[in-house]
Length: 574
Image (cartoon, rainbow, N blue to C red):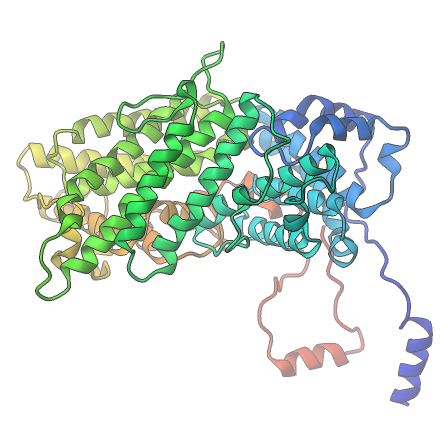
């Protein structure tokens, strides 16, 4: 009986091809193509992974909208979705986001086809466009997965080999391959360094493999090349912080030298400088260019992470028996000052960051949040430092910036504002109490204090809350925060990503303890406490209708479900 039923099914269904599913009834029309013409440059400003003139020429062809090829439908709809985000007014972002996600659903619907048959450059470009759109949300996990698929597809079709060929391809073909390879490499290293996920491009230095013949002398291409070079340095920095149990002093010295050399290759007019506080050059409207601003923010983050790796090395060496004080200890004040300088430079640059696009703002916001956590750690550990009071002014300016974004521009950043305001309050309390001699303060220098034995979990300290009237309890709170950030965490960026995303990392537990100490409610559905509802894909219907969400079910329960008369319920995006 069972065999005959299987034979019947095999005849009718067993050899049928898969059919393309429909997840959205919103199809591109002439208005969306016009939007592409006006906004594609914004989408590709930081990562120009394709030639915009070529793509705009394609959409002007008769019947471009109706071309059924999976790669074309994926890249067309994904880019339309990104353009909607970039061209939406700040106040209207939450309302129009569902419009963008409707088009992204069209792109997502052909993802299985791209995985099965995506053996072309166009398929790789389409997956990159999908990963970039998902990167504009708070779903960092899905964004990383899509990017990983995009990179694996490029490698599987030999793109990393083709892009190095000399004379085998036309200049246009080589430019297409080179731009895509560089853009995915940059995004991969950014994602890896900021979230502590292993890079998909591990072991591949794209900048050494891709010819630069297609590059022009334009500022945009210069920045693109500089970002690709910096991405190579980022990959080595990440290994020091997340892969190695103990950072290597030789490697850290080499990374510092590489960053110094890279800085000298940056044109003077856009060169970042942590010490002097040089800010990105501004346009006529008083705002900096997005690619230049992101170049500066990424560079400052690299410098900060090298300083933090040196701190971990100092802590390890201090715990070794009969370990003589060496160059790491002697340079500790220098690294402490550099960590402070990079954090201050990052927070200062925010005043000039372009704020017309919420998508641009959200992509950049992780850097000033990380910088504020850096300053919080340093101020709590050393509140009597001569620069501590000026650090407070940077906290205040960050809070004011967020208040303007929330109350005047209608940005969905209230949770970020609430969290940063609590950081500011702790920093103010630490400095005010220290200078007022109202409580005992441990003036131990950072990062040498890491080795002083403050390596335990918070434990009972979570009972202490802001607003306490006891100076002793306030001191406990401040020291607890400093110890968590300086003794337990690998870097404030990982704490930040736990606050603003949904990908667990090596500092997520530290982030949860910080949130508990500061009475910041943790987010729901796997997201951190700072994540806006408008940046959760499920808010706009990009989720599965089932309530299971992939949770584990015992085998007997699964079997019972499959043997029931109704059969397993269908799952589809709604």
